[in-house]
Picture 1 (cartoon, rainbow, N blue to C red):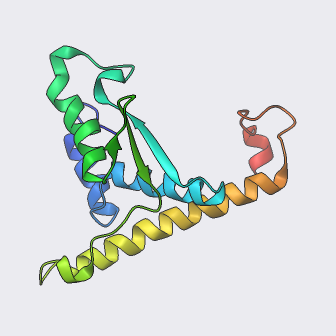
Picture 2: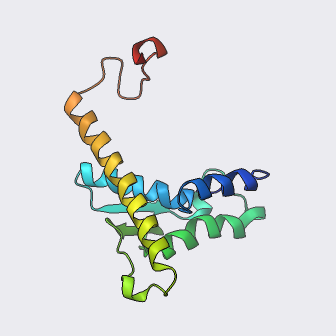
Length: 146
C-alpha cells in the first residue's frame, strides 16, 4: 500500500490519471469487488509491524501506510491485533461533502465502483471456468493470449 522511495512523481502522475483516487484506495475497491464475487463480507488487514518488510527504523511511515489507512477506512482492531472492516465500505453521505467537492467526489466514487465491478465480473468469470489445468496460479503463455 505504500509507494516506492524515489518514485513520488510517478505515483502522483498515476494518481492524477486515475481521477485522483489513491492507489491504495483502488486496491481496496478491487478487493471489495473480489469479496462481492466470493460472498466475502469482511476484509482483514494485518498491522504495520506484522508486515514482512517492516523495520522499526521506518515505523512512522509504515503505520501511516497501514494502520492509519485501515482506521481511515473504518476498520477496527480485534483482540488478535488484526484490522477488520465490513465490505462494501460505508461512504460518507454527500450531504457531508463540502460544496465545491461534490462533483469530484462523485467522479471518484464512480471510478472506484467501476473498479470494484470489473474485479467482481472478472472473479465471477474465473469461477465459472473451473480450475486451470496447470494449477491455480499459473500464467497463460504469451502465445495463448493472442
